Image (cartoon, rainbow, N blue to C red):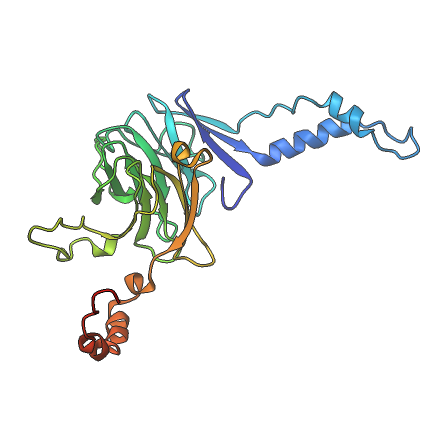
Length: 291
């Protein structure tokens, strides 16, 4: 759904992206009700509920505002630009990322033919900077694109690739422009910070190295994480759902959780707070067996 106007986008197996207006639907309902109104012929002036429901069992048909063709396979996800009801993007099983502008027609405004090396499952905009777009794919990666720097030859040129998933579901953090989350069939929900990319790795030697940009991983689900969302009022609280129906007896699992604040707070604040307990930590005697 669009954030600013009563518009809805959909995509499907017919390879099309369709733009709908909720206002058109409301207008059709009003016209239908007006045409079937009994007028003032009864004492109440109202049509009996049973009679109205029987005559209106079929909802009014509403045509689309626009049908946008450009994908060669199933459209998997569509998203409005955060600041525009006329600009949106879509991804599909044809490995394409397409940007659309309803003001200039129903053909792609920009089409990236090979945004990934496999099917694209999801797409999202950065709500703080709409030039940045994230895509998740079956090629085990999340990619970040800058729409100002998309190549003209149709080959995707992401500004960064985040590795460590099987298939990602994406959402930006409402708190920080560089932070986003990704969830996947591996059962993990990762929190990434693009600003951390390029920093020295946190782990070396025989221990597995942390993927660049990853600073937290939620491992509380027992099966693939199919969706999640950030709490707008408390930006570091997340609700996530997993498809573990067989293990739980049906219905899947919903979790509400948040990471420890020492993980996402500024480093200087964390070091200052931990410094208060340094003497206590170093002075603690080892716990005795059984205690």
